[in-house]
Image 1 (cartoon, rainbow, N blue to C red):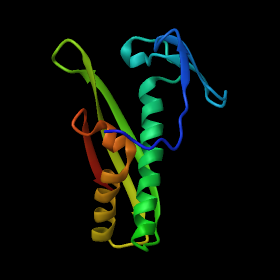
Image 2: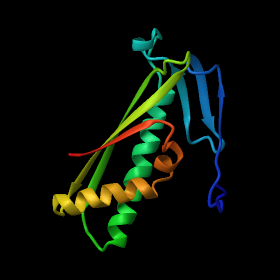
Image 3: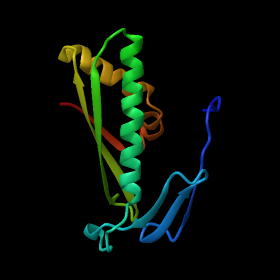
Length: 139
């Protein structure tokens, strides 16, 4: 699938996830990368799963806002992305995501429909579809 590019950015990492450093091309993102203690690391920095969780939650919340506006619905929203890293059974690793979506100001059925539509619109959902397990939970 090709896209009409609307925006491009980049980030450079040295040292990987254990003891790395990540900087975006504009310098706004500038973080120390550390493996979490749960994975045998020292902690004390961020990790790729946290960055992915923040990106996916932000992207999904924006997609949900777009869907609500297109439907002429007014609601307040928040999205929490829970990203899990695990062994995939094939000698490698994989991810799973649970999106906990809060929608206030409209009835539950309309909120559920908007969440499902947002999952079709969101670039992160489209990029991960068929590659990782993504669970949607309307809370």
